[in-house]
Image 1 (cartoon, rainbow, N blue to C red):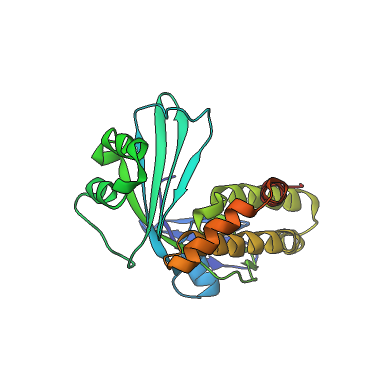
Image 2: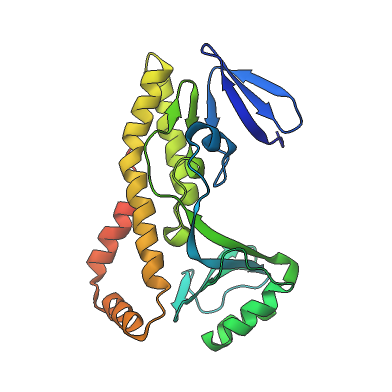
Length: 258
């Protein structure tokens, strides 16, 4: 626990994982669940860096209840800007702010930047930001990868963001990793060999995760629109979309058949 994997060696009948401190661990299967910048993926696929989506995010938690929300999450869209908030219990509210920005840009006071960029989003947002301690604000650039097959070779497989990193627009990054784990565990428990299990695992998961990645990318592209005509068309489309169509789309995202 608490050790970074930096590489591996597939020995045929077992696999050896190399850790950052120089130690090694041996086992019958290595599952690379090491996230967006996976060292296991880099060795397995060698397909370069993730794709920058063109926008960054700030996230924070304020020690206040979200007023007048009736338990619902709230998301507001502007021109190249988004702000969302949701109560997380224990008298606290989580919020996120998204803006188009160059990759790698950073500031000394993230909270001050969010206050300035989102000052026109209303009193509720301003009050929430005022209640947020500066040390509870994180900035993260948003990345994903183009979906591609080949999640396993030999005794090494990928899972979650290491296999199919997605933008957070649908809130599905962690959810898809959990689904992966359920399917992988089921395949390993029922198939006669690890090759058959890993083949079944990828076959059952690839199309669903591909759709999630691409749908989340499309959602983010629309939400981060900046042109006047594009913003007008986006807002009109959202208003005119029937509730049953929104429900059907959400059910496709949330439904998972083991």
